[in-house]
Image 1 (cartoon, one colour):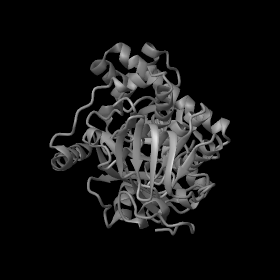
Image 2 (cartoon, helix red, strand yellow):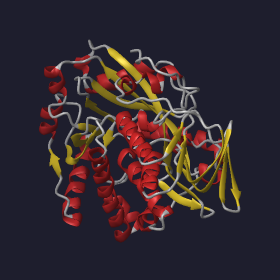
Image 3 (cartoon, one colour):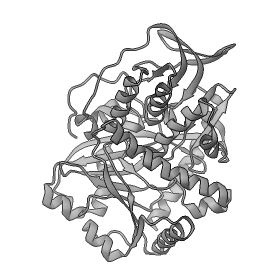
Image 4 (cartoon, one colour):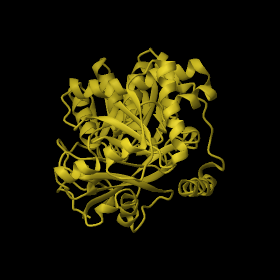
Length: 443
C-alpha cells in the first residue's frame, strides 16, 4: 500500500482503521487545496446549521450562503473525509434504479419527474465545476456492462426505452465485441455507453465546493462532531463537545455517518463499506489498452465493480463490500482479486494505494429526503449513486428552506421503509441478503 502525502491526521476515522481510510487514498495524495479549518469553540447563532461536509452539505451551504443566509457547517472529521472524498468518482447517469423499475413502482408521472431531476443533477455538477473553476479531472463517458450474457438484452431495452419515452439520445447500446475493443478484456458482454455520464476526482470536487461555500460566506468547522439536537422556540440548538450552535434550521447531511444523532430517520438506511485501489502508473500505452477512451465503467453485479483511469494512467478500481464497523484486514487482496478477474494481464502491477469508505443504502436503493418538525431537513441514502444526486440534494435542500420545495418534494414523495429488525437486528438480515445476492453474481 502506498503512503499518502503528509497532512494533518484525522481524529478518529469513520468506517475503519485510518491507515486504509481517508488519508491513505490516491485522492488524498493528489488533493489540490487541502486546508485546516478551526473547530467550533463557544456559542454561535446562524440561520442554518449544516451537519456534514460532503457533497450534500457543501452544496447546501454554498447555495444558502449565496442566497444571503448565515451558515455554519459542522464536520466531525475533515471536509469530504467520508464518502464524498473516498468514492469511485463515477458520475452516473439517471437515478439509482432504472426508469422502467421506477415507472412500475411509482407511476409514469413521478418517474418522469425523477428522470428530469437526474438530468438536472448531472448538469449541476458540470455547472459548479465550471462556475467555480474546480480542477477535478472531469471526464465524459460512462459504460454500463453486463457481467452475464443474459443481462445484455435488458440493458439494450433500457436504452431504447429512454430514447422512446424520454427522447434521451446520449445513450448508445454496444455489443460485446465493442466492449472488448474499448476495455481490452473479454470478461464482459454488451452494455450501454452514455456520453452524459463520466468520472472525476471526487475529493478535489468536494474541496472545490468547500472553497466556493466559504467564498460565499459559509463558515466550516472541522473536527466538530454534532452530539445532540434540541428544539428551541426559534429553531434548533446543536451541541458539540466545545460549542453550541443556535439556528433557525438544521440540515442533516451525514449519510452513512449519521450514527445516533437523529433516531427518527436512522433506521431507514444502512451504512456499508466499499473498497478501492489505485495501481502504480501503467503508462499511456498500457492505460489505453485497458480503457481506450478512459470511460467510467460499471458492471451489473449486485456488488458492483467499477473502474477508470487516472490522469497519470493508473487504474482506479473499486469492488467488494463488507457490512461491519471495520474494514477487512486483507483489504488489498480482496480488491486486487476482483481487479484480476477483469484484467488478469495486470498480475505484475504493483498496488500503490488501497482504501475504503462508508456509504449508506436504503431498503429500496433510492435516496431519502424529508423534514422533521419543519426545521430539520435531511437528505441521505444515495446507495452508491451519490455524486450527482447528492450535489442536487444540497441545492434542493437550500431551495426548500428558502420556500421553493417543488423539486425537493419529488424526492421526499419516494416511499421509504425501515430496515427490518431495528437498529441492531437489521445487521444479520442485511448480511444474509447481501451474501445471497453476491452468490447470484457468481452463478
